Figure 1: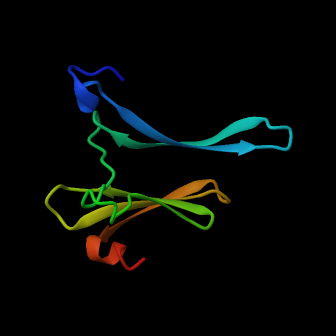
Figure 2: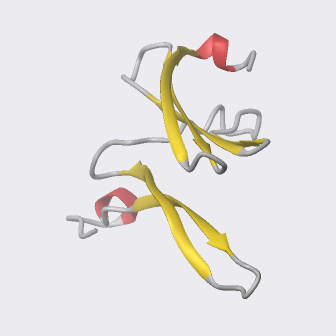
Length: 102
């Protein structure tokens, strides 16, 4: 995406998660694509405290969990869980303290 200035957000950086199926013949097929970070749309993954004590993308069994910051200044996260088996994503908004218990 084209931005108006320098740096990542000035350049309009966007990040995607893409799930592929690879068959026995090593052919690939894109199954799912999700915008996970966007300077243009203001979609920001949580990066924790910067000391690798907190993760915004976590693999759990057959799912990948994404955690976005919502409404700067609040104690809420938006959680998205992509399920490889179902090839679908579910969203929920939770309190930050609850996210550490999961």
